[in-house]
Amino acid sequence: MPNTSRVVRVHRAGGPEVLELEDLPVGEPGPGEARLRIKAIGLNRAEAAFRSGQYFFKPQWPARIGYEAIGVVEAIGEGVQHHAPGDRVCVLPNFVQGPHGVYAERAIVPASSLLAPPPGLDDIAAASVWMQYFTAMGIVQAGRAAFGDRVLITAASSSVGIAAIQITRWLGAEPIAVTRTSAKAEALRALGARHVVASLECDLPAEVMRITGGRGARVVFDPVGGPNVETLAKAMASEGILIIYGGLSGQETPYPHWTAALRGLSLRGWVASQIWNDPQRFAHYRDLILRGLADGHLRPVIARTFPLAQIVEAHRYLESNQQVGKIVVTVD
Ligand SMILES: NC(=O)c1ccc[n+]([C@@H]2O[C@H](COP(=O)([O-])OP(=O)(O)OC[C@H]3O[C@@H](n4cnc5c(N)ncnc54)[C@H](OP(=O)(O)O)[C@@H]3O)[C@@H](O)[C@H]2O)c1
Image (spheres, rainbow, N blue to C red):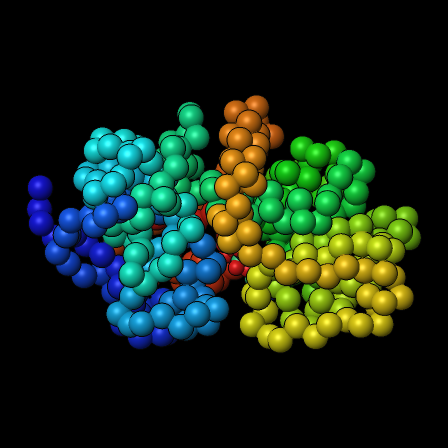
């Protein structure tokens, strides 16, 4: 076994070109850690924010990068009890990037981030599942989406957006997908959206009111934020719940006071640590995700794959916003 591994590190904040493939010593896992041979990596938008220095914390450079993967355990550190060399495992995005990162041929990760892959999924699908479905479960519960609700889902073509479409369908709610242009409208309908709104091509509140017979959306899931939140609020039903779970707009999010007050809206933020820090909630969502995958309610959608050597191109594609679903990087 070679004692070096190809590893992606970031030496300074910047565009995709700052992702550098280096040969680094492999090292041994410390207490509570495991070393994996990585097979496939699920890309997340959070990693583009981390790379460009726009994440919610400022990393120390050089930093390792990458949250979500599938691999095979090569070695375990002291005190690791539930995993052994040879196990096929997924890596959950519940650790701090920088000291750890899964964009690599071999990576050391906290053993607390390991989870058995869902049965029956190949490496590419298994690398894509946990972040999108845990997040979508979390926002669906936070928004108390239920049977019959009209649910507005912005950035609907994102991996989390598609997961939210699938889960709201599973509940018997009615997903209304928002995408900026109509280029992805057919794809979103084929993936389960009951209606599609191309937000740059119409008056969004008027279109949502038309679709919902004047009532508005009872729940909104929004990872975009920024001034457009006021527009979303105007598309909502009385006493609706708007969950802001990301900052794709890169802009400050003003509180839409009068629209929220006049309609009695609730606005709240959401982050995945609300799952990782709650073992009961984690186990509940994990079991629901496994059930949904087994019975076909949940079906991971892979937009495109890239080899690790093309990690820069993979990030360019991630930020091009052409994707419908998850981007996965494969490691030979
Ligand atoms: N809070 C949490 O813990 C948590 C966990 C996971 C993910 N997230 C967030 O969920 C979001 C989706 O993540 P992902 O990895 O699934 O993303 P992704 O696959 O990269 O999704 C990108 C899609 O979002 C839309 N989009 C991008 N920039 C936009 C903008 N400025 N305004 C409107 N729409 C925009 C585009 O769709 P169109 O071009 O079709 O409009 C694009 O195809 C991200 O914001 C991420 O940070 C949050």
